[in-house]
Every structure is written in C-alpha cells, then in structure tokens.
Length: 127
Image (cartoon, rainbow, N blue to C red):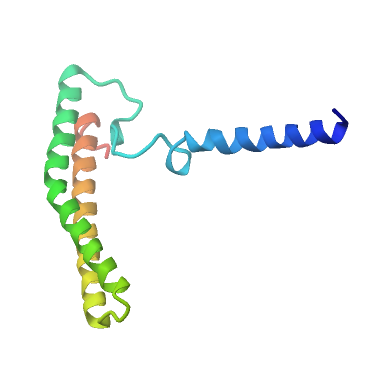
C-alpha cells in the first residue's frame, strides 16, 4: 500500500475514534440521563442518607410520571394537529402553552427534589 492509502486509513480511524467515543459519553459529554445523586454527587453518604436520597428520587418519579404522560399526550396531539396540513393556529398555540405549563411544573418538581437532597447532605445554613 502506498502512503496515500495509509493516510486515508489513519484519518478514517481517527475520525471514527473521536466520534465513536462521544457517542458513549451521553448528552453534552455527561454520563447519561436522570437526576443521579444531584447535589450529593461526590459526597460520602451514610446509609440513612443514601436511603433518604433513594426515597426522594422515588417520590419524585411518582409525582412526575403523570406529568410526563400528560406532556407526551399533548405533544402527540400537537404533532398530529400540525401534520394535518391545515392546523388551527389558535389550537396549536393553546397546546404549546399547555405543554410549557406542564414542563414548568416538572421543572419546579425537580428543583424541589434537588433542594431536599441538598438540605439532606449540607450542614444547616450552608445552602
């Protein structure tokens, strides 16, 4: 093989290794989806704290599940409305507002959960 062939193979391998590595990294180079330990990341937790963290996450998942289902239903309704070819603009805007309100409620729930996590692992008055 000549030098051009080796150069092309090397360049292809370099591109694949860079792109392939980032595919396993998760969104924005992070470690995947979900809340993880949130504010407790990198801290040593007692068994009681770990159990309470898990309970907070489970409670959050229970509260957020109906909101996720409702948001999914609204998104599906909006997409079918838009795909109909002649969507009613007022209905489309109303659906978008409803989706935004649901998203905001989900965000408030996440913030409340992370606040409780932070209160659990931080000394009083430090957060």
